[in-house]
Image (cartoon, rainbow, N blue to C red; front, side, top):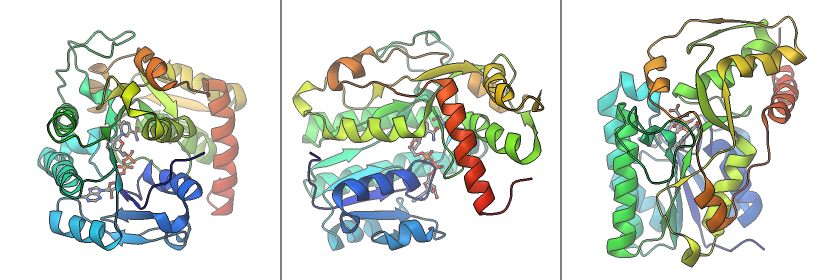
Length: 326
Ligand code: NAD
Ligand code: SER
């Protein structure tokens, strides 16, 4: 039985995760109980018609407070952020949104004694000095991207609000997420999504990391379930607040291409690494998520083959619906 919350606010709700998380939360808690917000205004009818929708820039603390009061929000899923690729090109924007936006969310939640705040972190907290294989929960966090810097500082800020004010903040360190409903927003792991689109639409793909680049990844249904399961887990069992290591899949860009080629033998990939390569090379290849498994029973369901089957089938349906499949 799902825990009932009075009102949930999702920030960054039109992004890769938010556009699907809003639907999952509305199915669980009721459409009227979940407010979708984003600074963008191009919400799909699916999001707009399923419950309240608001334009909200999280760097504007007053606007955030006003929306929380108007809807009597007691839980925030804070997804508004600038990801690693865009963050390297616009470091000031990444710092502003990822740090000041998070601080506004934590302050608004603390002042209103909210029930809970969920804040995803990322494998970007790790850096070149972190062990890259089976990266432990507790290890060196010395990232070299601006995105990573804000994610480490964000984890520490969340921990501070939990320790100092008792605000129930929880989070996971997501690996790269793969999904078909909404395209990713400018991260280093975006190639693992774009490859499926280009396989179906063009039969070939130019990959911006090298063939032997291995990164941890996860399919969106597992990612959504992880966040909701952590939100509903008994607090006394949680040894970490922000944030738990999470693992599901680890594969090279070449292995990903091969899993598509198995199903589409004509598919071709060329590798032309760009600035994303340095970011990818600073991140782990695989993650030790034994603490998440022990504390709140985390377990992923999708392997590479099952994900590829699902991605290709769902993307084909979606691209046919909008009439853009070659
Ligand atoms: P995304 O880029 O797809 O979506 C982010 C959303 O935030 C966008 O819709 C954007 O319009 C919005 N946004 C940007 N600035 C804003 C602002 N100032 N105010 C309000 N909204 C703003 O990102 P996502 O993939 O959905 O990521 C959500 C969270 O999960 C982020 O914290 C991200 O770091 C984390 N995460 C994502 C991944 C992944 O692979 N997608 C992996 C690890 C962690
Ligand atoms: N997918 C994200 C990125 O590449 C990881 O946090 O930025």
